[in-house]
Amino acid sequence: MDLKRIGQFIDIPSTAVCLLERPEKEITLAINIRVNQEKHIQTTAYVCLYNTARGPAKGGIRFHPEVNLLETRKLAELMVWKTALVGIPFGGGKTGVMVDTLGFTRAEKTVLVKELVHLIRNELNCGDYIPAPDMGTDAHDMATIFGETHILECVTGKPPRVGGLPGREEATGRGVATATSLMAQQHRLDPAKTTVAVQGFGNVGSWTAYFLHSLGFKVTGISDITGACFLPQGIDTHKLKKDFCINGNNLASCIDCTKIKRDELLEQPVDILIPAAAGGIITKNNAHKIEAKYIVEAANNPVTPEAEEILNERGTIILPDILANAGGVIASYVEWRQARSGSLTPREETYQVIDSAITDSFKEVIAIAAEKKIPYRLAAEVKAVQEVVEAMKDRGWL
Ligand code: NAD
Image (cartoon, rainbow, N blue to C red; front, top):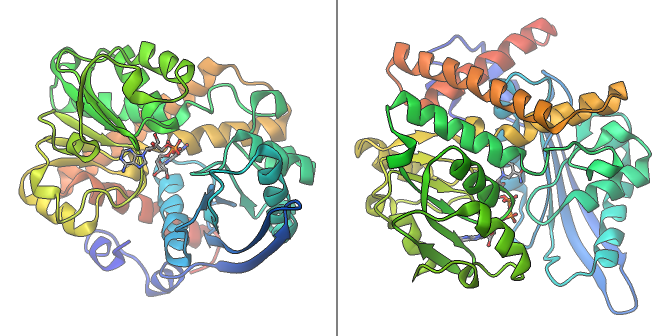
């Protein structure tokens, strides 16, 4: 976060800058574990509790071979702004484990998750850090964390049968679709005439495409790691989501449409482009090839700062990740609240909380953007930093 730039719009005391420029707590852990007779894992895990002024550090556990300390820190910081912007009582954190678990059996992965719990037991037990799934981890892994700690609220994203929340699985995609619809209304786009391309068909991408179809948008392009499909008249993403599971997650075999190269999806002539895969995919090298007038950041950090400069000059409107993909963490809050109160939450209530938090935040962001004549991302950041600074004042940290 460029605090100097944000400081042009709000007062940030220098003591706050010091606190916000670095994480509160960062742990580097050596993992050394024999998973079974054949497999021995020696790797590194990074745990970052970036800021807890507004509540416990909330953020997912990522298992990926390219995880590193800087990326983990950046993602933890992003969670601080996301939770602040949408007004839920959490700070920001993240865990990254440098490991490729693609070929792992469920049992092998469970051994690794248990070892991680063993290493960060203090943070979990006292409620300082509340993990959730991220790339490479899933609801089963969160159930393992619950099983190891016996504390229902110490982890979110659990399966509904194990204290999880109906609607959590699709929550991020639901929020992305709601945010896209609000942006379309704001810019007077008629969903039926608005074309959308979604990059990524995992949890976030597939549910985003699903809900956009429900809202009447024309999803004309979809890609995943294996390739991309384009259908000018619009894809039935409800059917695609069903067929995708039946056909063993093979996107190309599910739709009768034009097959294009994977990265060509980003350059398709659509109104809205939704990157919902990895970070850093829109760079200074491909930004000028993007034809979409609107980008909705379903992934975290999909647009690099250099690319954003180019896109801003071209008049592309970007709905930032801290607003667009906050549906998941909003649902996590509902799950945490449910675990603490012992209540049960119907799926419709989860949707209602997501939609209303995203709508309120969207309105605040467009009001700040209009008043200060700044892009949506900067407006969202101004609001988020202000919330965290005020919380630090409330707590007597400044
Ligand atoms: P996932 O692993 O379920 O899905 C990732 C998808 O991206 C897969 O379909 C994969 O095939 C595809 N993909 C990977 N590289 C690609 C490429 N180069 N081109 C096209 N497709 C590619 O992950 P997810 O949970 O859906 O997360 C996606 C993004 O959203 C990540 O950036 C994550 O940090 C972010 N995010 C996730 C959540 C959540 O609740 N899952 C919440 C907020 C943000």
